[in-house]
Image (cartoon, rainbow, N blue to C red; front, top):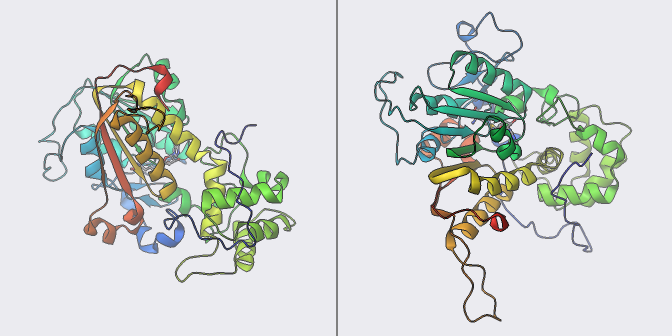
Length: 395
Ligand SMILES: C[S@@+](CC[C@H](N)C(=O)[O-])C[C@H]1O[C@@H](n2cnc3c(N)ncnc32)[C@H](O)[C@@H]1O
Protein backbone atom coordinates (compact mmCIF):
# COMPACT_ATOMS: atom_id res chain seq x y z
CA UNK A 1 0.00 0.00 0.00
CA UNK A 2 1.24 3.46 -0.80
CA UNK A 3 0.78 5.24 2.49
CA UNK A 4 1.71 8.65 1.37
CA UNK A 5 2.39 10.29 -1.89
CA UNK A 6 3.89 13.02 0.23
CA UNK A 7 7.13 11.42 1.45
CA UNK A 8 8.79 12.78 4.58
CA UNK A 9 12.09 14.49 3.88
CA UNK A 10 14.98 12.94 5.82
CA UNK A 11 15.71 14.87 8.95
CA UNK A 12 18.89 16.94 8.50
CA UNK A 13 21.77 15.19 10.23
CA UNK A 14 22.99 17.15 13.18
CA UNK A 15 24.90 16.36 16.32
CA UNK A 16 21.83 16.32 18.43
CA UNK A 17 18.12 16.17 18.09
CA UNK A 18 17.81 19.64 19.51
CA UNK A 19 18.03 21.77 16.38
CA UNK A 20 15.82 24.84 16.33
CA UNK A 21 12.21 24.06 15.64
CA UNK A 22 11.37 25.22 12.12
CA UNK A 23 7.95 26.44 13.14
CA UNK A 24 6.30 27.67 16.23
CA UNK A 25 2.80 26.58 15.37
CA UNK A 26 2.38 22.87 15.85
CA UNK A 27 -1.31 22.74 15.11
CA UNK A 28 -4.49 21.60 16.68
CA UNK A 29 -3.93 19.23 19.52
CA UNK A 30 -5.54 18.06 22.68
CA UNK A 31 -3.46 20.44 24.71
CA UNK A 32 -5.27 23.18 22.82
CA UNK A 33 -8.70 21.67 23.34
CA UNK A 34 -9.93 22.46 26.79
CA UNK A 35 -12.42 20.10 28.38
CA UNK A 36 -14.91 22.96 28.16
CA UNK A 37 -15.16 22.42 24.41
CA UNK A 38 -16.53 18.94 25.11
CA UNK A 39 -20.15 19.30 26.04
CA UNK A 40 -22.46 16.67 27.32
CA UNK A 41 -25.58 16.62 25.30
CA UNK A 42 -28.97 17.15 26.86
CA UNK A 43 -30.81 13.85 26.44
CA UNK A 44 -33.84 15.48 24.87
CA UNK A 45 -31.73 16.52 21.89
CA UNK A 46 -30.68 13.01 21.01
CA UNK A 47 -32.85 11.22 18.50
CA UNK A 48 -33.91 8.06 20.31
CA UNK A 49 -34.40 6.22 17.04
CA UNK A 50 -30.79 6.63 16.09
CA UNK A 51 -28.61 3.56 15.69
CA UNK A 52 -24.90 4.17 15.81
CA UNK A 53 -25.01 7.32 13.80
CA UNK A 54 -24.77 10.85 14.94
CA UNK A 55 -28.19 12.31 14.83
CA UNK A 56 -29.26 15.34 16.70
CA UNK A 57 -28.87 18.97 15.75
CA UNK A 58 -29.39 21.66 18.28
CA UNK A 59 -30.50 25.16 17.40
CA UNK A 60 -27.00 26.56 17.13
CA UNK A 61 -25.25 24.25 14.65
CA UNK A 62 -23.70 22.22 17.44
CA UNK A 63 -23.71 18.63 16.29
CA UNK A 64 -24.02 15.63 18.53
CA UNK A 65 -23.02 12.02 18.06
CA UNK A 66 -24.01 8.85 19.87
CA UNK A 67 -21.00 9.15 22.15
CA UNK A 68 -22.34 12.52 23.29
CA UNK A 69 -19.46 14.50 21.86
CA UNK A 70 -19.99 17.67 19.91
CA UNK A 71 -18.16 19.58 17.25
CA UNK A 72 -18.38 23.36 17.33
CA UNK A 73 -17.90 24.53 13.75
CA UNK A 74 -15.01 27.01 13.57
CA UNK A 75 -15.23 30.33 11.66
CA UNK A 76 -18.72 29.25 10.72
CA UNK A 77 -20.33 32.46 9.46
CA UNK A 78 -17.10 33.66 7.86
CA UNK A 79 -16.50 30.44 5.90
CA UNK A 80 -20.05 30.15 4.60
CA UNK A 81 -20.04 33.84 3.60
CA UNK A 82 -16.68 33.30 1.84
CA UNK A 83 -17.83 30.26 -0.15
CA UNK A 84 -20.82 32.27 -1.33
CA UNK A 85 -18.61 35.27 -2.23
CA UNK A 86 -20.25 37.49 0.39
CA UNK A 87 -18.74 39.80 2.99
CA UNK A 88 -21.21 38.51 5.57
CA UNK A 89 -24.41 36.51 5.79
CA UNK A 90 -27.81 38.11 6.23
CA UNK A 91 -28.89 38.31 9.84
CA UNK A 92 -31.15 35.50 10.93
CA UNK A 93 -33.88 35.84 13.44
CA UNK A 94 -34.57 32.93 15.79
CA UNK A 95 -32.63 30.52 13.60
CA UNK A 96 -35.29 30.63 10.88
CA UNK A 97 -34.58 31.13 7.20
CA UNK A 98 -36.68 34.23 6.58
CA UNK A 99 -33.68 36.14 5.24
CA UNK A 100 -32.29 33.27 3.18
CA UNK A 101 -30.63 34.42 -0.04
CA UNK A 102 -32.05 31.39 -1.91
CA UNK A 103 -28.95 31.07 -4.10
CA UNK A 104 -28.76 28.51 -6.88
CA UNK A 105 -25.57 26.71 -7.81
CA UNK A 106 -23.40 23.73 -6.93
CA UNK A 107 -21.29 23.81 -3.79
CA UNK A 108 -18.88 21.37 -2.11
CA UNK A 109 -18.19 20.84 1.58
CA UNK A 110 -15.00 18.77 1.34
CA UNK A 111 -14.94 17.96 5.08
CA UNK A 112 -18.49 17.37 6.32
CA UNK A 113 -17.60 16.32 9.90
CA UNK A 114 -20.84 16.87 11.79
CA UNK A 115 -22.15 19.25 9.12
CA UNK A 116 -21.99 22.59 10.91
CA UNK A 117 -20.79 24.46 7.82
CA UNK A 118 -22.99 22.45 5.46
CA UNK A 119 -26.18 23.19 7.39
CA UNK A 120 -25.57 26.92 7.55
CA UNK A 121 -24.76 26.95 3.83
CA UNK A 122 -27.94 25.02 3.02
CA UNK A 123 -29.97 27.76 4.72
CA UNK A 124 -28.79 30.22 2.07
CA UNK A 125 -29.38 27.91 -0.89
CA UNK A 126 -32.43 27.60 -3.15
CA UNK A 127 -34.32 24.35 -3.74
CA UNK A 128 -32.55 23.77 -7.05
CA UNK A 129 -29.06 24.14 -5.55
CA UNK A 130 -26.82 21.15 -4.84
CA UNK A 131 -24.38 20.51 -2.02
CA UNK A 132 -21.86 17.70 -2.43
CA UNK A 133 -20.25 16.64 0.85
CA UNK A 134 -17.12 14.54 1.34
CA UNK A 135 -15.67 12.87 4.40
CA UNK A 136 -13.27 9.99 4.95
CA UNK A 137 -14.79 9.13 8.30
CA UNK A 138 -17.60 6.53 8.34
CA UNK A 139 -19.28 8.12 11.38
CA UNK A 140 -19.31 11.54 9.72
CA UNK A 141 -20.67 9.90 6.57
CA UNK A 142 -23.53 8.34 8.54
CA UNK A 143 -24.49 11.80 9.75
CA UNK A 144 -24.24 13.17 6.21
CA UNK A 145 -26.44 10.35 4.85
CA UNK A 146 -29.06 11.13 7.46
CA UNK A 147 -29.03 14.77 6.34
CA UNK A 148 -29.21 13.71 2.67
CA UNK A 149 -32.25 11.56 3.45
CA UNK A 150 -33.99 14.68 4.72
CA UNK A 151 -32.68 17.17 2.15
CA UNK A 152 -32.54 16.18 -1.52
CA UNK A 153 -30.03 18.95 -2.30
CA UNK A 154 -27.33 16.99 -0.42
CA UNK A 155 -25.17 14.30 -2.10
CA UNK A 156 -22.70 12.30 -0.01
CA UNK A 157 -19.30 10.96 -1.02
CA UNK A 158 -17.43 8.68 1.36
CA UNK A 159 -13.93 9.33 0.10
CA UNK A 160 -11.03 11.72 0.34
CA UNK A 161 -11.46 15.20 -1.07
CA UNK A 162 -8.34 14.35 -3.06
CA UNK A 163 -10.73 12.47 -5.38
CA UNK A 164 -12.65 15.72 -6.02
CA UNK A 165 -12.65 15.78 -9.84
CA UNK A 166 -13.34 12.07 -10.32
CA UNK A 167 -16.00 11.87 -7.62
CA UNK A 168 -17.84 14.90 -8.99
CA UNK A 169 -17.55 13.59 -12.55
CA UNK A 170 -19.28 10.40 -11.37
CA UNK A 171 -22.24 12.63 -10.40
CA UNK A 172 -22.09 14.34 -13.80
CA UNK A 173 -20.59 17.53 -12.32
CA UNK A 174 -17.64 19.19 -14.03
CA UNK A 175 -17.68 22.63 -12.40
CA UNK A 176 -18.90 24.12 -9.15
CA UNK A 177 -19.64 27.56 -7.69
CA UNK A 178 -17.92 27.13 -4.36
CA UNK A 179 -15.55 24.83 -2.49
CA UNK A 180 -15.05 24.84 1.25
CA UNK A 181 -12.84 22.68 3.47
CA UNK A 182 -12.27 22.65 7.23
CA UNK A 183 -9.09 20.59 7.46
CA UNK A 184 -7.86 18.16 10.09
CA UNK A 185 -9.82 16.16 12.60
CA UNK A 186 -13.06 16.89 14.39
CA UNK A 187 -13.64 17.07 18.12
CA UNK A 188 -15.65 13.80 18.10
CA UNK A 189 -12.70 12.02 16.48
CA UNK A 190 -10.37 13.20 19.25
CA UNK A 191 -12.86 12.72 22.05
CA UNK A 192 -13.62 9.12 21.14
CA UNK A 193 -10.57 7.36 22.61
CA UNK A 194 -11.23 4.22 20.58
CA UNK A 195 -10.22 6.11 17.41
CA UNK A 196 -6.65 6.37 18.68
CA UNK A 197 -6.16 10.10 18.05
CA UNK A 198 -6.01 10.92 21.75
CA UNK A 199 -3.05 10.72 24.11
CA UNK A 200 -5.40 11.50 27.00
CA UNK A 201 -7.92 8.68 26.47
CA UNK A 202 -6.96 5.07 26.01
CA UNK A 203 -7.67 3.23 22.80
CA UNK A 204 -6.14 1.24 19.99
CA UNK A 205 -3.27 3.00 18.19
CA UNK A 206 -5.30 3.53 15.02
CA UNK A 207 -5.59 7.24 14.00
CA UNK A 208 -7.17 6.52 10.62
CA UNK A 209 -9.89 8.93 9.60
CA UNK A 210 -11.25 6.26 7.29
CA UNK A 211 -11.49 3.16 9.46
CA UNK A 212 -12.85 1.16 6.52
CA UNK A 213 -9.51 1.05 4.69
CA UNK A 214 -5.77 1.53 4.99
CA UNK A 215 -3.18 0.79 7.60
CA UNK A 216 -3.46 1.84 11.26
CA UNK A 217 -0.58 3.58 13.02
CA UNK A 218 -0.03 0.42 15.10
CA UNK A 219 0.39 -1.68 11.94
CA UNK A 220 2.74 0.90 10.49
CA UNK A 221 4.81 1.12 13.69
CA UNK A 222 5.29 -2.66 13.63
CA UNK A 223 7.15 -2.48 10.35
CA UNK A 224 8.68 1.00 10.05
CA UNK A 225 12.39 1.47 10.73
CA UNK A 226 13.73 3.94 13.32
CA UNK A 227 15.00 6.41 10.76
CA UNK A 228 11.79 6.66 8.75
CA UNK A 229 9.82 7.05 11.97
CA UNK A 230 12.16 9.83 13.13
CA UNK A 231 11.78 11.57 9.78
CA UNK A 232 7.98 11.43 10.03
CA UNK A 233 8.04 12.83 13.59
CA UNK A 234 10.33 15.62 12.48
CA UNK A 235 8.62 16.55 9.25
CA UNK A 236 4.95 16.25 10.18
CA UNK A 237 5.23 17.10 13.91
CA UNK A 238 8.23 19.42 13.77
CA UNK A 239 9.45 17.37 16.74
CA UNK A 240 13.03 18.34 17.58
CA UNK A 241 13.67 15.20 19.58
CA UNK A 242 12.45 12.90 16.86
CA UNK A 243 15.38 10.48 16.89
CA UNK A 244 15.33 9.59 20.54
CA UNK A 245 11.52 9.39 20.55
CA UNK A 246 11.57 7.11 17.50
CA UNK A 247 14.14 4.84 19.18
CA UNK A 248 12.00 4.61 22.32
CA UNK A 249 8.84 3.85 20.32
CA UNK A 250 10.60 1.12 18.36
CA UNK A 251 11.70 -0.52 21.62
CA UNK A 252 8.08 -1.08 22.68
CA UNK A 253 6.84 -4.69 22.61
CA UNK A 254 3.49 -3.82 21.10
CA UNK A 255 1.35 -0.87 20.04
CA UNK A 256 -2.01 -1.63 21.58
CA UNK A 257 -2.63 1.36 23.78
CA UNK A 258 -2.49 5.08 23.01
CA UNK A 259 -1.85 5.84 26.68
CA UNK A 260 1.14 3.47 26.75
CA UNK A 261 2.51 5.00 23.58
CA UNK A 262 2.05 8.50 25.03
CA UNK A 263 3.85 7.45 28.24
CA UNK A 264 6.82 6.09 26.27
CA UNK A 265 7.06 9.33 24.27
CA UNK A 266 6.75 11.34 27.46
CA UNK A 267 9.58 9.40 29.11
CA UNK A 268 11.81 9.81 26.04
CA UNK A 269 11.09 13.53 25.63
CA UNK A 270 13.84 15.58 27.29
CA UNK A 271 12.19 18.97 27.08
CA UNK A 272 8.64 19.27 28.39
CA UNK A 273 6.81 22.52 27.86
CA UNK A 274 4.34 23.90 30.35
CA UNK A 275 0.74 23.28 29.33
CA UNK A 276 1.63 20.92 26.51
CA UNK A 277 1.76 17.13 26.62
CA UNK A 278 5.16 15.92 25.38
CA UNK A 279 3.42 13.53 22.96
CA UNK A 280 1.48 16.34 21.22
CA UNK A 281 3.78 16.75 18.24
CA UNK A 282 4.51 13.04 17.79
CA UNK A 283 0.81 12.16 17.78
CA UNK A 284 0.14 14.97 15.29
CA UNK A 285 2.95 13.70 13.05
CA UNK A 286 1.74 10.08 12.98
CA UNK A 287 -1.82 11.20 12.30
CA UNK A 288 -0.86 13.49 9.45
CA UNK A 289 1.33 10.80 7.94
CA UNK A 290 -1.06 7.85 8.21
CA UNK A 291 -3.90 9.88 6.67
CA UNK A 292 -1.71 11.45 3.96
CA UNK A 293 -3.14 14.78 5.08
CA UNK A 294 -0.69 17.08 3.31
CA UNK A 295 -0.72 15.10 0.07
CA UNK A 296 -4.53 15.21 0.05
CA UNK A 297 -4.53 18.98 0.59
CA UNK A 298 -2.10 19.47 -2.31
CA UNK A 299 -4.27 17.32 -4.59
CA UNK A 300 -7.44 19.13 -3.53
CA UNK A 301 -5.96 22.58 -4.12
CA UNK A 302 -4.63 21.62 -7.55
CA UNK A 303 -8.08 20.36 -8.57
CA UNK A 304 -9.80 23.52 -7.33
CA UNK A 305 -8.49 25.37 -10.40
CA UNK A 306 -10.30 23.36 -13.10
CA UNK A 307 -13.33 22.62 -10.90
CA UNK A 308 -14.24 26.17 -9.89
CA UNK A 309 -16.28 28.25 -12.33
CA UNK A 310 -15.09 31.79 -13.10
CA UNK A 311 -16.14 33.81 -10.05
CA UNK A 312 -16.31 30.62 -7.95
CA UNK A 313 -15.05 30.77 -4.39
CA UNK A 314 -12.44 28.73 -2.50
CA UNK A 315 -12.54 28.82 1.32
CA UNK A 316 -10.18 26.63 3.37
CA UNK A 317 -9.69 26.52 7.15
CA UNK A 318 -6.44 25.11 8.50
CA UNK A 319 -5.23 24.50 12.03
CA UNK A 320 -1.47 24.27 11.74
CA UNK A 321 1.32 25.99 9.90
CA UNK A 322 2.19 22.97 7.74
CA UNK A 323 -1.22 23.25 6.08
CA UNK A 324 -1.61 27.00 6.19
CA UNK A 325 1.77 27.49 4.49
CA UNK A 326 0.76 25.22 1.60
CA UNK A 327 -2.53 27.02 1.05
CA UNK A 328 -0.82 30.40 1.23
CA UNK A 329 1.87 29.38 -1.25
CA UNK A 330 -0.68 27.82 -3.60
CA UNK A 331 -2.77 31.00 -3.66
CA UNK A 332 0.33 33.17 -4.04
CA UNK A 333 1.54 31.07 -6.99
CA UNK A 334 -1.79 31.27 -8.75
CA UNK A 335 -2.78 34.84 -7.99
CA UNK A 336 0.43 36.73 -8.71
CA UNK A 337 0.52 36.03 -12.43
CA UNK A 338 4.28 35.61 -12.58
CA UNK A 339 6.76 32.78 -12.17
CA UNK A 340 9.50 33.38 -9.58
CA UNK A 341 12.33 35.57 -10.78
CA UNK A 342 14.96 33.89 -12.94
CA UNK A 343 18.15 35.88 -13.13
CA UNK A 344 18.86 34.53 -16.62
CA UNK A 345 15.73 36.17 -17.97
CA UNK A 346 15.23 39.93 -18.29
CA UNK A 347 11.58 39.63 -17.18
CA UNK A 348 9.99 36.75 -15.28
CA UNK A 349 7.51 35.00 -17.60
CA UNK A 350 3.79 35.36 -16.91
CA UNK A 351 1.89 32.43 -15.47
CA UNK A 352 -1.89 32.26 -15.61
CA UNK A 353 -3.69 34.13 -12.80
CA UNK A 354 -6.25 31.61 -11.65
CA UNK A 355 -7.25 33.34 -8.41
CA UNK A 356 -7.87 36.91 -7.33
CA UNK A 357 -8.43 38.58 -3.98
CA UNK A 358 -6.63 36.03 -1.77
CA UNK A 359 -7.38 36.85 1.85
CA UNK A 360 -6.76 35.33 5.29
CA UNK A 361 -8.87 35.82 8.39
CA UNK A 362 -8.71 34.41 11.89
CA UNK A 363 -11.31 33.87 14.58
CA UNK A 364 -12.63 36.70 16.72
CA UNK A 365 -11.77 36.97 20.42
CA UNK A 366 -15.35 36.04 21.20
CA UNK A 367 -15.03 32.82 19.20
CA UNK A 368 -11.71 31.75 20.75
CA UNK A 369 -12.97 32.39 24.26
CA UNK A 370 -16.04 30.28 23.55
CA UNK A 371 -14.22 27.56 21.59
CA UNK A 372 -10.49 27.23 22.40
CA UNK A 373 -10.09 24.88 19.44
CA UNK A 374 -10.56 27.90 17.16
CA UNK A 375 -7.40 29.56 18.47
CA UNK A 376 -5.08 28.12 15.84
CA UNK A 377 -7.55 28.37 12.93
CA UNK A 378 -6.98 30.43 9.80
CA UNK A 379 -9.43 30.80 6.95
CA UNK A 380 -7.94 31.49 3.53
CA UNK A 381 -10.21 32.43 0.67
CA UNK A 382 -9.89 33.50 -2.97
CA UNK A 383 -12.02 34.00 -6.06
CA UNK A 384 -11.44 32.01 -9.25
CA UNK A 385 -10.67 34.31 -12.18
CA UNK A 386 -11.96 33.67 -15.70
CA UNK A 387 -8.53 32.51 -16.94
CA UNK A 388 -8.97 29.24 -18.80
CA UNK A 389 -7.26 26.32 -17.12
CA UNK A 390 -4.09 24.93 -18.67
CA UNK A 391 -3.39 21.41 -17.57
CA UNK A 392 0.36 21.88 -17.14
CA UNK A 393 -0.06 24.57 -14.56
CA UNK A 394 -2.17 23.32 -11.68
CA UNK A 395 0.50 22.54 -9.10
C1 LIG B 1 -12.54 19.79 11.32
S1 LIG B 1 -13.59 18.51 10.83
C2 LIG B 1 -14.84 19.31 9.89
C3 LIG B 1 -15.97 19.80 10.72
C4 LIG B 1 -17.13 20.35 9.93
N1 LIG B 1 -16.78 21.53 9.19
C5 LIG B 1 -18.31 20.62 10.82
O1 LIG B 1 -18.78 21.77 10.88
O2 LIG B 1 -18.79 19.71 11.49
C6 LIG B 1 -12.69 17.73 9.56
C7 LIG B 1 -13.37 16.56 8.91
O3 LIG B 1 -12.73 16.34 7.68
C8 LIG B 1 -12.54 14.99 7.47
N2 LIG B 1 -11.36 14.87 6.59
C9 LIG B 1 -10.10 15.21 6.86
N3 LIG B 1 -9.32 15.00 5.78
C10 LIG B 1 -10.12 14.56 4.80
C11 LIG B 1 -9.92 14.19 3.44
N4 LIG B 1 -8.70 14.20 2.88
N5 LIG B 1 -10.97 13.82 2.71
C12 LIG B 1 -12.23 13.79 3.26
N6 LIG B 1 -12.47 14.09 4.55
C13 LIG B 1 -11.44 14.49 5.31
C14 LIG B 1 -12.34 14.40 8.84
O4 LIG B 1 -12.69 13.03 8.87
C15 LIG B 1 -13.29 15.26 9.68
O5 LIG B 1 -14.56 14.67 9.78
